[in-house]
Length: 440
Ligand SMILES: [Zn+2]
Figure 1 (cartoon, rainbow, N blue to C red):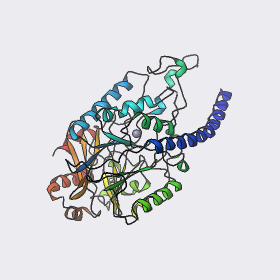
Figure 2: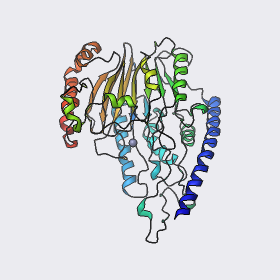
Figure 3: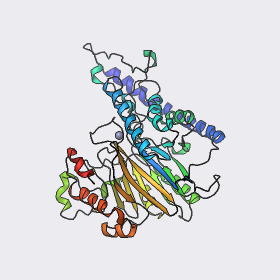
Figure 4: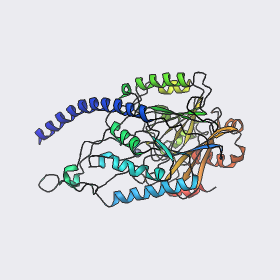
């Protein structure tokens, strides 16, 4: 048994070197291909509606338990969730916010087959999209214990996607390869492989959103969307110093006067999320003895924040820019709040997929940008077609009362205060009391 482990360790450490070298080559290759082919205009505000609406699909976890009946059935349910939300909201853009697949459950050579399935509800409706990586997207296959026969030898069970066992793969599909496949298979994708010097992070890129009157990519955009790879899977859960420097360079080049509003997307919450998190049920006492989270807006707060491993400067940089209005993450399936932190908002998306842990109702965070007058707002659309947690971002994050008057959201005052109650006094509500939370 020991030599098996030793061989495994040696082959894994060898493959890290190879994978990294290979990834650098693939990234360069990907970007060269894109440089030649990517002339399409940036997405923009529709002149008919005067708005640009984004749906965030977080933690779909396609391919989970792919060798059972249960797993593929969850993927079908996830497709229904996305389809309902897309048909109800008719967004202009979809962001896939990481953990698109559960790669550690996928025993085929190319996990992009599942990735493609996850993107298909948006693609089939002709909706443009972009993605960032989560911690599960490039994980190596983890051998399920129930695959071991009584002899101790694993039964080789491959997904139905394979008709030949020789196509089983236990190494995972690299981030770069997943991204290349997405871009090459989807004309609607605005994802990018990111600069090679940010490896092993891959999904690092900026996407400008046009004004409705803009006809080319040269004039200043209405909003800038930044996508960052927060790691996990094949490397630590961090946003590196190199990524921080890249963000600084990009933002000072694209938005030197900080006059263009900026939104930021990655998968794993930073440590700042832990600092602003409303108390969960086990911390309820703190709520009444100085816990000051009354200005958070959300409907579920059922777990503690599971943050990145360390903080290397990205949050200080973001908060030094008044143009940065909000950060959006997934990863924690039992949280869907937005809380103010310094001069911006820290928001969770909403668990969209039936894959992944947790039985909370599924939904998606929506973001809406209007052009005239300019506004930035967000809410959560549920699978059952209800919506909740409406919030406006285009103002400073003050405490609850000031927030309402400063942001002019008196028309949703009652809803806001209900959420205020939900997040501060009902955050201990059990999962079966969600009707109470959404009952407005
Ligand atoms: Zn997840």
